[in-house]
Image (cartoon, rainbow, N blue to C red; front, side, top):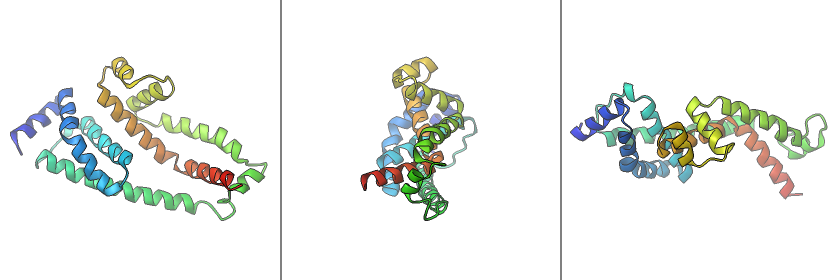
Length: 200
């Protein structure tokens, strides 16, 4: 391991935010490119890399890296990107398998008074979103609420919470990714509903 790498690791362990910024400045673009080559989606790649760098910060006191930082980072991002694709594929299979032929028809939700789609989207989805937000880690939840519910800019949130803007961005990416996964089945129903309306 290079001396510079060891210095960065030691700074991370001490909670030095300059080391956190160093990781973004020196590795973020490279790691996003590597992830993009696997997931083929820019936002997803950026989310994976942001989550990874934030995870390093969360476990900084336990870090133990024997290889060079760049080798460790590249392998970690490759693994995370592959895991993302596998999880996404599994969730799609589960979401589709839970719907029978009748249930998969958007018109069935519109026609049945006992379970109309409008009620699902307005009540159940709203409750699901609130529950998913509550399950976020405390700091990510605070950042998400300030951004989406209080409509505050990242710089304002960073100042209020005494963290860097990059940390705010990382929390938001992590929160949005978690909500996307938790609300996957509702997004499928919304998609079916919109498709039905377009084909009317």
